[in-house]
Amino acid sequence: MIGSSDGELLQAWQGGEASAGQTLVTRHLESVHRFFSNKVRDSTEDLVQQTFLACLESADRFEGRASFRAYLFGIARNLLYRHYREHTKGFDPLTSSTHVMMVEQRSPADAMAEQEEQRLLLRGLQRLPLDLQTLLELAYWESLSDQELSEVLELPVGTVKSRLRKARSELDALLGTVSGDAELLGSTRHTLNSWAEKAGLGLAPAEPGTRR
Image (cartoon, rainbow, N blue to C red; front, top):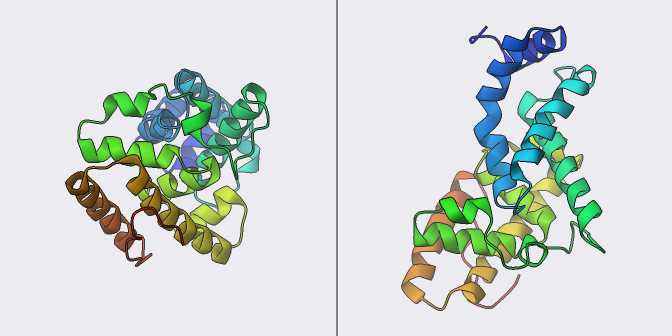
């Protein structure tokens, strides 16, 4: 069972094999928890549970044409947006940021960040529109491919690539407004640039305070 594919585990779980569900949840729990931890303040655990429950309830929709991770994060993204639509007046993922919606209170991810660069990066990500924050975190932290991101966002791959470049550029510019420490800013941007290179973005850092 442990060596089974995600699709096989999901099918067995749907068929009533609880151990298959436990194996599948254990396999992806850390990633799903990480997805919510920098975007909500006090509902992380509930949203994680809802994601796996919805995964089981909608298992018939997973036909193996997309990767299981794209299917799972698509569910998580929809639940996240529903959460904010229900709790935040005027919520729009294209303009609303978690920095504002969490009212400056620390998220679970803030509490877990050990290095100054990590904390600065988390603050920068939270100032992006939620749609762009989600896109960057799935690309960098979860290493989803362009095709998988396309499946999660239900957008063409070309549009996903364009949004990734936009999000990367906006985050780089935002970091300059969050920190006045030149050394810390430089080391954080170095980390961000390394991520961008691995993601194939190949972008030079923006000047502090500027936007492309």
